[in-house]
View (cartoon, rainbow, N blue to C red):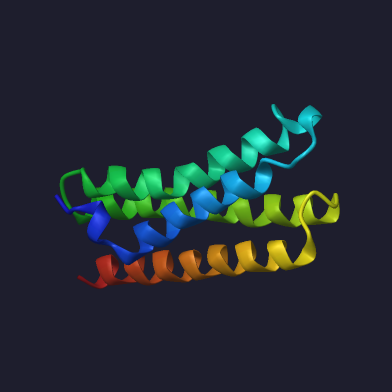
Length: 118
């Protein structure tokens, strides 16, 4: 069992979730149960699955939850693009959030690779 709070990738994913919440607060009210909810849930899923994987027994279980986190990160990546194209996010805000997601995906991929080889 690992302490998820000690993982840099978890810290970055947690920060992303906070930033997503902050930047979706201004989305249109009719999107509250649509894109706003979807992107928030997907962003929270990234650090949540890292934490859950750390609480499981063994690297195989951790790897499985890291891969689920990777899928959620890809989902957020698309949803950010959609929000930008719908003009819900300004281009500079989109770029900043997208860079965060891409970095998290790279870190997750590296972590998974380490577990495969370890």
